Length: 410
Image 1 (cartoon, rainbow, N blue to C red):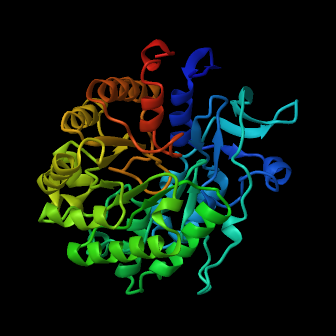
Image 2 (cartoon, rainbow, N blue to C red; image 1 turned 90 degrees about the vertical axis):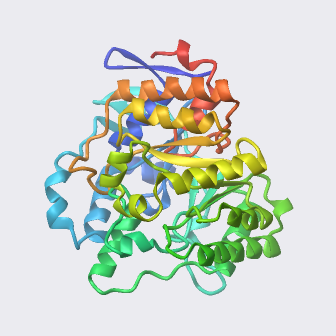
């Protein structure tokens, strides 16, 4: 059942609360780290992708603004002076502290909202591959089920000076290229296979894999690279030993039939992400993607996958919060009616301003999206990936509670 909460005299359900916490961030008490850090997956390090679980199991991204902004200033020192004016916009009414009963709890303006839980502790981030590559910075554990490789290859669009405004990694690639610096070393297929083996087989702290990188000009080379990763995973781990699914993000090729190779290599679902449905906003916010691939190439590939492999095999992520709700839902319905899964990744406005703004929309926006997605998923038989859900996505939550959300606190 979808839980409800009182916030400033207003009733919110768990999905409402999740998106507010994602988009506003949290201030975490030092006592939370010291008290629970040895038994739970809660770390004072933004690279370790912290999250917490609401009482009904809803998985929620935990961005500690203090640690995150300090890291951001260091990592993006190339642009810190230009962005410093935005930091004053980044404050939050949410805090995470220890309640009187000794449990971790979420507070809003100092008043308790609910007790929360953390995923079980794992020493995943202490590990290194046989080649000496630290797991930290190479992959993250998301929620209770997912191992995510978020940057296995670079983004040619960003390196060419046209990154997506909302993309943190793209901003890094753009900065390094502009300064004549080399891109960071990416994990090899062997590294990735070892990380998967540890997380899925040995530590059993993940069930499913998410594999992604940047957009590339040479899609055939990207396809070959992805196959190397998938083949290395299959050789070392065995697809039969991965109990969940493999969700693969890739640049849509000119010839959609190229994705056949990726399904044959082990992918369960393939995402070619439009990110923004409004074409005018897409050109402004994602200049490289709009210029080099564009909507038609994405749709051609997504529709090919749906036609050849059936519904729920093709996916497209959207950054929910950077375009009007009506626009996103129009795109979501267009895709869902063709058997394509629209994924709703909530915009986290702490990395870089979008259109000069670092303020996420209000609750009414996300409620409109939540209700719209629940209807769309039910109407067209669409099921998003995610098990219990990914940290920053509201799609799986809306699907899990699709029969309830219209009767919740909306």
